[in-house]
Length: 522
Image 1 (cartoon, helix red, strand yellow):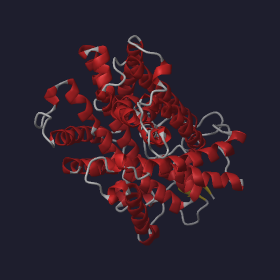
Image 2 (cartoon, rainbow, N blue to C red):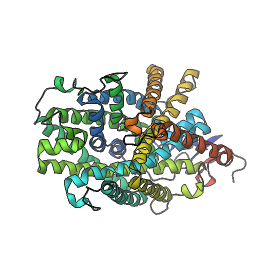
Image 3 (cartoon, helix red, strand yellow):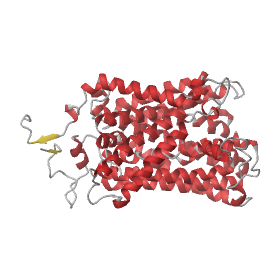
Image 4 (tube, rainbow, N blue to C red):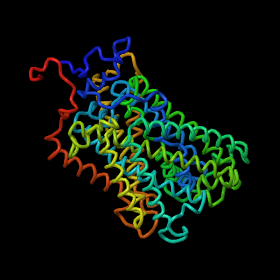
């Protein structure tokens, strides 16, 4: 039997080679429901805005310098090299399956429905926490631009910053929810405009910082500030901790494929968008970090570990020019939240379409007016705000959960690359004909991607007090929070799936493609 779209084989949009944008949907048994309005730049913008160089570098620069000194910069190319291997595997998958909820559908196609559900569950949970974590970045930037944005207290109180962060973050999430609910076209326009501004600002920032260089790379890239001395692993241990600052930034490039059901010629454009987003982020982010270290007046200033990159920009470029760039960071944070929520919406929709979530028919319903899943947008927005409220009185626990969310994304990626490697070893994997293919390099690249993902997941989860219990008193459950939390989420969620949802799983009738040759079909 051959699955076909409800509009027949000669439907509009068929290309000269006989292929069609909906071919991947036909193969997976879904009918097309989301409107295809996105072009090449839109999908590229979705991937790069999720990574969001200005957001990530400005949010985590202080962490890298605090634990690894200026030499932590080397973690940037290290993480890029590892994530590039993962991205290349994703490109082959995006060429064949450019559909909503990319990681979920890829894990399902490679490892079966049980692996797919677990990968989707881990990714969805992590995405909602990531949404809240990114929204908190407003607090790191807006009050530094003007004290007016410190709405709660004057910032000196014990809970002023945390409470204000929740307020600013909640407003941002509500804005993102409204935009995403009104349809992908509006989201894509705002996102693309924001990414355009972010890219221009990032290049300009590199130029401005380069014009203020005060030292050479040799003195910066070897400076460790004495960190790691006296420790068992020496500076290597400190470097592994500092590398989290880079690992926390360079992910989410799969979003370019998750919008595949709403873009034109996704089988060709999605792989290109994934690679372009990752490579552009690596080059631009690496240069910003490098020139910031070369330009800051005092490389040993304590403010590097507290004020981060915001301090460097204001101190180096002056308040007027510095504040202009900080406003661009605010724009970058905004479009990053839009992209994170957009990816989460498509993931929830994809799982619900397979009846793999409670109230699947409701979550998978596409609004006839906005042509987007509105209910998932609202659900993810509400959950994001609720998670933010945890930050008011329990900031340490929130930072633990945020760190764990990143690990869960790396684990979700492993639930794609490991089954894919098994398929390669068995000779069962065939890339899409005439589209992106790794050829003979596929096996070694896939092996490196799996090893990298496993090693970095372990590094991220390692029970370091400075990451999971940074302030006293010390608690064992915080130190081991990564293993405990992920264990509870994975085992608890999978138990629910196995005993409840597994019995209901299957493409919902209202989302199922017609099957030619089915004797039960009318």
